Image (cartoon, rainbow, N blue to C red; front, top):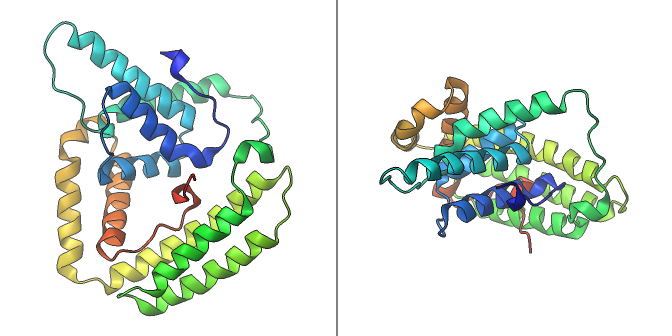
Length: 244
């Protein structure tokens, strides 16, 4: 299935490339679940290259299709089904690329104009201004996002634009972690308990396919994402920026 791979040097396409590949191999449109998105975030945070994830998805479906020919099997309904194959592909890619240089990404390859970054940050700031919980933390985060938006607009386009975006992403990661901490502290106890129980139920079918560390990370991402959804708050990461 190698001919399905589309080269992609822009790591901000991580989410959409994975979603597209999974839907392509499954053969039918299936919206990714909150658990699926949490798993993608866990892969991203663990530094799993996009190429490894795409290879893992292909390998998992190749194996599934070969078995399907020998008997009736249930349809694949979740990205977590591919998790073991993704980790194996990541290890193979790491071994194969040991000692090789990382390609330089040019500004044309990123496709992330400074104005679009600024709009994304300002939109997130406006959503935080309307928050009904953790008002102080949300307000402080909104102020910082608007400062970053101004910095993005002031930045000059250059061949290092990808590195500029990665620098923004590191700051946004810190802001998100602080925001999550404030939200968890302010949220009712029964809500947090409920989110954790929900995460346990969702992950139960895939425990044999994930390591303990991966399960812990996916569960954490799942709980955080559900908490934001509950309070109608945005993700700050540029990975969530509109591709339009």
